Length: 349
Image (cartoon, rainbow, N blue to C red; front, side, top):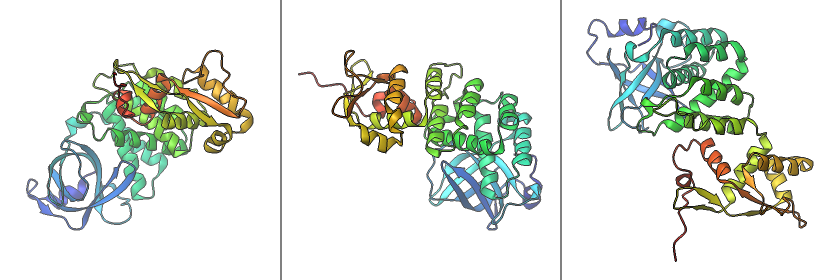
């Protein structure tokens, strides 16, 4: 557990291994997009049992803060932040085993967290827990990059952008929660820093979640896997209206799988005014935005000789295989694109 555990040691003394009731304590944690406060039934030096209806897979890592219910304890000895692993599930909750210090790897990350706390000065429990959860997730996926991530968070980002980075990281963690090998997933630190730096430039939550999806997809058991770098580069070149347009056409178009595992879409006829209203695009820029998506290889024209804009004020848009896969990855899908779209190969007649 962390260094600030004075109150817990006093509470557990003299029998550190024995479970003791702890009705006055609660466990605060960030669960996906939601902040949770779970009552603590009992606690020992090795773990804690929390009462909750949430069902997590065995072995899941969670970042928790233990303290008495109420406002954030200003004295660090009256609260503890630590990592825990789901050891067992009960009828009304789950038993969490504290992760030992040698498993947590790196004083550098603890120093980063403490430095961010001093810089951001969280006033509320949820802000403190959110900060801790995000830093612990980043530590888990790139354990040896505390200095590199720290230079971004403490050096190049404003406090406001730090908040955006936390949202991106925690959304990625939420998307990876159901992965059976989530504790083994790692990411290239350079890629993580690039995603966070680019993603913090927007204040729109749905766009931050797109970046979180790309961050989740950058994680694999082989951190040197560079197959998704192109998607980060593509997404960084898109403006908000273009992302909305791609989202609309990838959602509405009829998707078809192939026997080779590739994904394709049928041409989608859209009314120009409807696209403008749906995406919030300025009408004078719609043709330019569509052409940029064509240039990026994310949508295709109906044919090489057909203009994008038709005389009847409609546009025929075909999301490309690349565009469909980018959209799936922005949603955190790490498998085959045709599984995301539930697209199957056409039946043979």
